[in-house]
Amino acid sequence: MPDRAPQPVDRQLPTEEARDLISLVRDIAQQEIIPKAAEEEDAGRFPRELFTLLSRSGLLGLPYDSEYGGGDQPYEVYLQVLEELAAARLTVGLGVSVHSLASYALAAYGTKEQQIEHLPAMLGGGLLGAYCLSEPHSGSDAAALRTKAVRDGDDWVITGTKAWITHGGIADFYTVMARTGEEGPRGITAFLVPGDAEGVSAAVPEKKMGMKGSPTAQVHFDGVRVGDDRRIGEEGQGFAIALSSLDSGRLGISACAIGVAQAALDEAVSYASERRQFGKPIADFQGLRFMLADMATQIEAGRALYLSAARLKDAGRPFAKQAAMAKLHCTDTAMRVTTDAVQILGGYGYTADFPAERYMREAKVLQIVEGTNQIQRMVIARHLAGPEAR
View: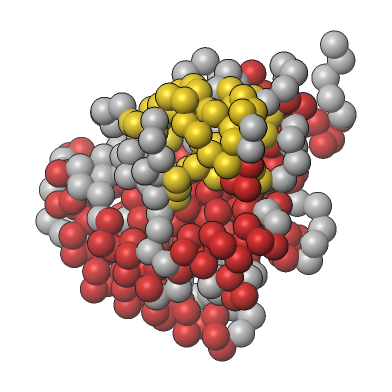
């Protein structure tokens, strides 16, 4: 059974331009994404042509400067676009979020010359990016990464393996964190590496329980040579760049999680209204009505939380704690809501004939990526009580 079009969310948007943008996204979702989502996810097919369309439509660079091909949109608007895309298909919403994450380092820390040279193609020229921080032996402990970049004249030679890379093997560019100095966070530097650079290769994509249409793979850098003009920021600044990137990226994950949860709620409400037992729709039974009410309340709370954090970011105020809170709450909400949606559909919820089981499988990964929810709790506690005593 093809996915249903999501019910339009009554959004509070700051401008008429933002309302037009949401309308455009909904049109694309209904015409280009939803009709193929179930089939393509089942087949494990990545919709590269759809990302080309999104790029041409200006949707891959929304939060960045129009001087370089971006959309000049505040995060308050950009995140609601992500939510709409993720509600249609998480592979698409999360893919846009990851592309934005990969573009962030250059947009925020690159030189004027670097931005002029690279950002237009990254933001609106059809390119697709990937973000390379995690490694096989350093996930949550990202500062322990082992990939090295060694200076050789005017070049750097990068050697190592990155793991769990969304768009690994199909990306046109990789934002790579590599060790250029001492152990720990101070010895890490950021680089912009072309996807077709000699020595870049990808392993066979991971076989995942969800998001099968989105390739996740190890990416190998075997003596990859890049010029110093592809170093982003100062030597040793890479870990600070990575953390700053993740604060924004966690808001993207939060919005995607609420999109998946909203899609699951819409499916549950529609099914419960149509399915009859004991002579009436199951939506008339109080126990089920209370489940739907709790699901809707948690979604609204998550949406309010990520938008509150986004408005802090847009105002130039600190938002790292709120981003961690949003990521924690929104992704836990997605897991609860999708699990309840499967329960409401009963036996049908456990079959691939309905999308509820896919939403449930997809929600799980959102509690893990871009900092597990255990890490988010550590971040929040650090803001409240300071770093742990050693």
